[in-house]
Image: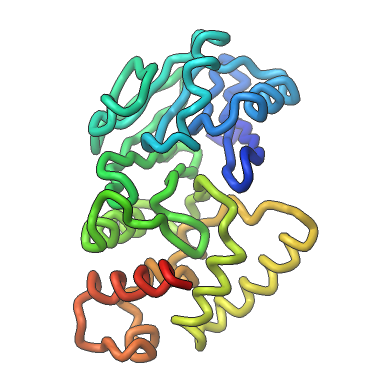
Length: 257
């Protein structure tokens, strides 16, 4: 569906909200609800009326605006079944593999636990777009708050195997520059990462977003997806370790970076 319109906008200190609009039937999806005022401003700017909210996980900076927006717009709210008791205002829950049709927009739910146990990523295959919440970031991944490193590695590895390389990835936060600086400490010989760092610095100096990214770009430069890479493993001195163990080491280093 090449005619869908996407509007990404900043919320809070470093969150993003994203609106997806189908001009054919006026379906308008909001992915996560971080900040009521910012979302209302984005809707006013675009002239769109909210019809659906897709929720990735239960953390307050992704959910706090659900109820006032639902009250104002009558939006239908969809979120992860595994976190239904933690998210007020849900009208429908989804689990791994669920497929939704919202207006003309086809949405697939992919379970990506780790940051939280029940987190869901949403893939719009016809549009070539995915929303990964706080699981996969540009050049990073979310902290492992509720799951285990093995669980998070499995989720990231699954996303990288399911989503085509050209898939545009929207995620929950503008962390890319800090993530890039860390990535250089564990993957210093990656020429693709060097090139990307220069682009990211230029974008942020102009106060422009670094998102969306693409799945292919993340595979080439995001150390949290590169636990199988021989040069990265050698640099870490973990050539014979499991992929999950390499990921866990990278995540532990990032936690104290």
